[in-house]
Structure formats: structure tokens, C-alpha cells
Image (cartoon, rainbow, N blue to C red; front, side):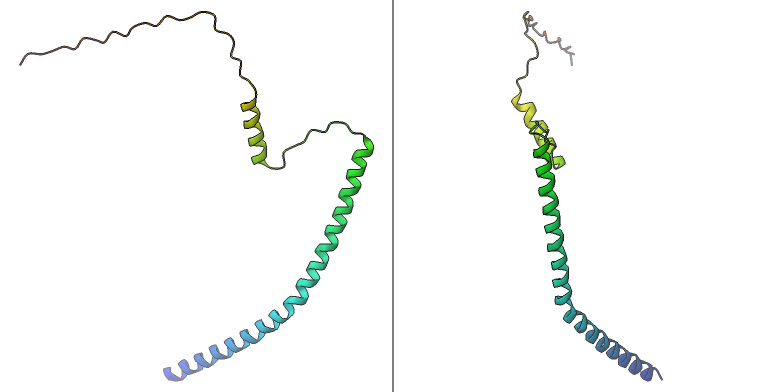
Length: 115
């Protein structure tokens, strides 16, 4: 009886594997046409976004050529610009007019014990 159950399970697995392989082949055959459609939609969107960016750029130039502060595009750029800005500016801690005296350090005497 157990042998019949094992044989039935093996045939069921074989049928399932055949069904899965057949369905995956049909999905793979549909893939190129779907990727072309997605690519066409993306190129259309990039063209629209480029046109919008051009219009905004022209509008900014039409308003005036005032100095616009450039903001960093990433946190790393902000950190690096702050670090480099601190390196290039001279540091002036103030003039030191009086000179300090240097005191000698007297070592403490060690106590010797007799044996």
C-alpha cells in the first residue's frame, strides 16, 4: 500500500513539474514584448520631463540672473563642502601677547625601606 502512495506522489510531482515548466516557457516568451512596451513608456516620460526642465530653466533665466544659492544634491556633498570650507578659511584664535613661564616638574622623592 505504501508503494502505491509513493508511486502516486512521484507521478503527481512529475505532472506538477511538467505544468510549471510549460507555464514558465509561456511567461518567458511574453517577456520581450512587455519590456519593449515599458521601454517605450519610459522614453516618452523622459522626453516630457526634459521638456519641463527646459521650460523651468528658461523661466528662471527670464526672471533674472540673480545669484541663486546652490544647494548640495547629496548629504556627502554637503559634508565635504563644509569640511573643505573649514580647511580653506584661516583660523584666527587671537594674538597671544604674554608669554607663559615654564615651571620645572620636581619628581617626588621615593621612600626607600630597609631590608
